[in-house]
Image 1 (cartoon, rainbow, N blue to C red):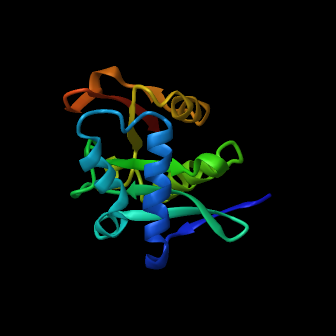
Image 2 (image 1 turned 90 degrees about the vertical axis):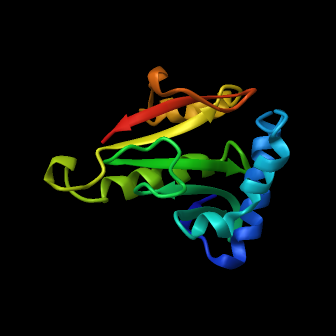
Length: 172
């Protein structure tokens, strides 16, 4: 099996939205009272694509995962500061998990961040990648830690009551 990653095309947005929402639901991330509205946000891939990069993972030509990569600020950045890229809404179809799609999507985001320009001191560029993850997403935590991300508890936050998010960072 070989996972291919690339930019999503608009015809794949519906599949990405369904996959990411299914992955979040399977992880227990949509159990909070506001989960109906967040489920709608997860499905709005076209809306995200207007201000961020949507990357898909394909297995034998079939979309099995997706992620939103925010290379620099804007409306899709929740926690990124200057010089930081942000990874959001990573999801792999529950029946495709464990085959490397999540790792491939994360590595693609990291490669894009590493190629995002020179050091921040030189007028721009990406020096760090950040992400938020639900406290219940233990499988995701293991993936991030395997890739070298470390917790930054000072940046943990609660976007809505009942949803506590942990912050992970990776210095490039």
